[in-house]
Length: 373
Ligand SMILES: *Cc1c(COP(=O)(O)O)cnc(C)c1O
View 1: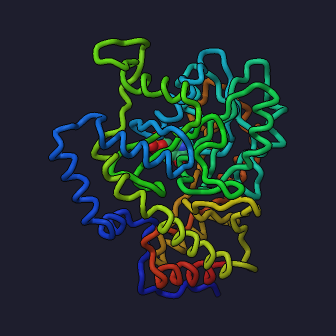
View 2: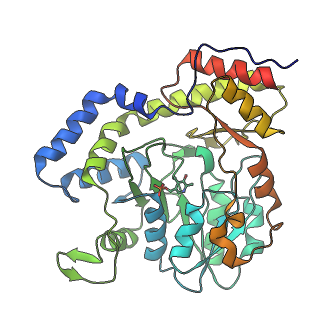
């Protein structure tokens, strides 16, 4: 009989409020500093965050924008991608990765993942390249770095730009080096639930390419460098100084909070070995940020509802892949064209791994999972 033991602790999937409670003094002071400054668009607070985040990522430039989707979209625009172009994207990602390509008037061309890592499979990329392909857009999904070296090699050989979607991977390392300056640019989201999360929408692009950085600063600000002089048709997508100040307060804690996530991941991996589930595959060169801890289980709905009954919050990232969304009906993609993305969508289950989750809560998750597998 599979009876789930009653747990004393209800474990939320992610407790954002607990993150605020831990840093309340610093965050309140940062907000007060912005309110007192009288400077409410761009200004020194945004510039300071851009310097600090670029330094953290080990690269030359960071450009703050309004959100992660804009970071992706504007980075592609700054690379000159537009109508008629194709960009290689993963078949299994959050739809923002595809939408950024579509917003440029370009076409997302999906490539299936390596099922062990859930990340873009470099061995499948070249077959998807056509004369229209302009860029490769790997995603560091769930905080696991994608295998960048073979992807960058394809980019160099085929003359393609490489933009990375780092929305879920702040602080992750690939072959010992933090993400941020491997490809031509990395787009970041600071959506509240991300590893480095603002208290509203926020995003950024990092790059070592000075010309690209310069174009991005113009594109995010109405196409303007000098007030009321508009060089190009730009967007209004500036990082809010209140969010920049909050991010500055949180950035010094990012590594420590990622380490807590990593410790929870290690406890899960040890406790679940031998159970009838597939653990996240972590290549030797990867130091993940553990944004999500995603297992694959058969009968996922049954497991999820039993965990829910035991007070354990879980989510599915993501239940419907982009090729099956109404938003992409017009691409007329074959429904059965992406069997790996479909299979993952049917089996993935994300367990709680927030940085404020204590040892008792982690044990409660472990007990509940063990009781139903
Ligand atoms: C969160 C996320 C985005 C979009 O970020 P927003 O700030 O919500 O616009 C893009 N790509 C991935 C993989 C994400 O997880």
